Length: 365
Image (tube, rainbow, N blue to C red; front, top):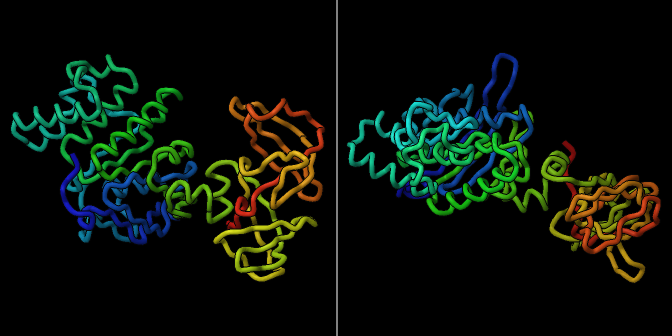
């Protein structure tokens, strides 16, 4: 259903784009490139600028500064209807007095397409979202997930250059939301269209995206593949926002070609991998995911090993989440699978450890 133009023609580029409302800077100097066919998610907390950025891409908001290009062509001056972008909103925005098929046909009717072309395109769009059997129903007769699929079909029916989705699943309950996440990902894979998706839900972004662009206070903090962002965050904010994380404030002890040693509250620990620190004596901030920490038996080996005491624990179904007090360091959050452990005991002395490549240095915000 996507267009046949080459990658260069259909790549979307934002170059130093800003939007301010008086003294308030909603989006601040954002440069971003979205290649043809990618599923890119704009992720950030409320007020981070992600929806404003999407609305500037769509043409509903005019940038204060910067340029937006589709391929080599500037489009910042074009109204929304001239950009040929599909749009799916949080509230679906279906016309209540029209059937599903009539809703899907609407974008083609306003473009004055021939009747036979409209009928064929509507069938194709409804087939793509598995909604053909409900073509003659009214929106009020559909479930939330079905309404969402109808809105998707309407956004796809005119073969847009790319599809913009503004928190489209936020009104759905948890189980249906998970099903729709999988459906959206499969739809993207089938049709090969560029998706730009806005959410504040970290797990949603991780599970669906080819790339995630994390925004904070109107600025782009980091853009990368989900695994890269999670395993190698650039800043404290990214590490803390994209999942749970522990932070170790330390001093570089020694630097070697394969990594470095760092001292944290009297404990000398090791990092190995591609991440480099500064010179010996410099401060370094390390981030360590709770699931990277192991509870050690006496004969277990670990490149980094600390003694501590279980302060609290929580049962989360597939895992226990423990708070372990480590002398000099303080509380560390540890996640361990429930099927591998007996019930934790508050006050129990344990040893914890992690591999040398598990903790990585990040920049302070």
